[in-house]
Length: 329
Image 1 (spheres, rainbow, N blue to C red):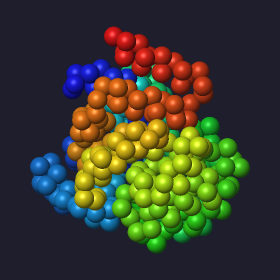
Image 2: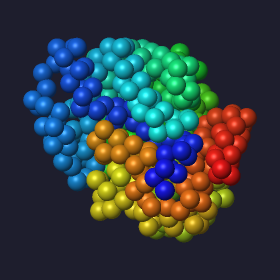
Image 3: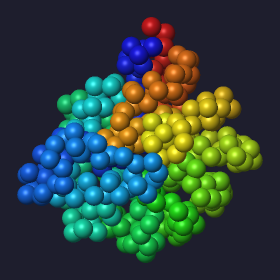
């Protein structure tokens, strides 16, 4: 089964590029930029990754980003992930990036996106991995800052396929960003939002995403099972969920494997992704292995993923044909 998963043509739709910053690269960038780290070794840094909920993870996560300063830093970050993705036969990825986590500490938007964009172009040419960028807003900042970031992104609109919403969900519902999302829709961006697992008011936040904001996709979202009427709505609308089992096990009580399987059985377009694999150890291969799905379930997960990508129809069909060829073999 491990070999079957390894050969499976894969699609990843929930991956924070800042969450792929492995300790080895963090040390390298810190040295490049003259930044002192509070850890003497890679092992000591990994040992500090001890978190049991979303806020404790976010504290470590944002602290680690300060080594990212220049365009080459963002290029190296993205290329490191894309090489790893290629080694696991990821054929296509939609990658989150958090510009506010960088502009808020003085790194220009232009520096961030140019480094990432150049890596995506080189990875396609050199590795055969296609990827697109999704710009996330940090929900624990003001909605006005999100709107300003949206406006700042417009000169680079051709490089960004959609917008997302992440960071600390407590007290920061989707409705807070309704006007930002309406403007993003008007600008032609596709829409997704995090509805993290087992958060306060999880189901109400999912309802706001589906009914009020009318997103194209939901990130995480397993708590939708608590409201069958919402499950029916996303089935009717064809909305996909980007689930991340290994990260679930770090920020809540389990991988939510049973819930993920139930959603899959109900026909929901569930996908499996790695989230922040430098912090929740496991890239997409390891996340697929962790669920212990059957071969047909694994194939269906990848069908779901390619189907809900934000790609033109002819590219979706090409990836799906590649998947079906693999299934027949």
